[in-house]
Length: 210
Image (cartoon, rainbow, N blue to C red):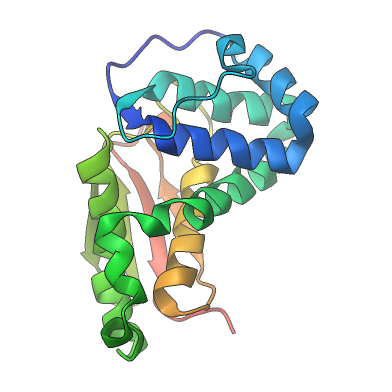
C-alpha cells in the first residue's frame, strides 16, 4: 500500500483503540497483525493506543487501516469487516460519551421515534466534532437525514472509485439502533471525499427497516 502522508488531524486514542479491539475480535490477532503490517502500522502490533481521549491518532493511520482491510479482503469482505468494527466501536465505547448519555434517560426513552432521531443524530455528530478533528454536520430532509463528515478519518488521503467509509456507516447504524431503542435503519454513503466529493455524506432514512 502507498503510505498516506500524515494529516495533522487526530482522533482520540480511545476511538482508535476500540476500532483495533473490534477488528481483533472479528478477525483474530494474526489477521489483525497482517492488516497492520499491510497498512504500514506495524508499530501498533501489541501496542494499541491508550484508553483515553487524548487526540493523538492521526487520520492518515485510521484511513490506512480501512484501506488495508479492503486490499486484503477485497471490497466486499473488507466492507463487511469495517461495518462490524464500526458497530462495535459504538457499542463498546461511544454510547458512554457525554453527549449521548442522555439517550439512556427515561425522558428520552419515552419520546416518539421522530423526536429521538431529531435529537439523537445531531448528538452523535457533536461527539465527533467535540472529541476529535472530525467535523460532522446534520441536515434534515423529507425522508432522510443528511449526515456529512467534512474531515473524514476513514478515507483521508485515499482515492477510490466509489464511497468507501464503511466503518463510519457501521458506527452510524449502531448509533441509530441505540438512539431508537433497538431499531435498524438504512444508512447509505452517497458522497465520499476519496471519490472527489467535497464531503462524505450519509443518507439516514427516517423509516426503520421492518
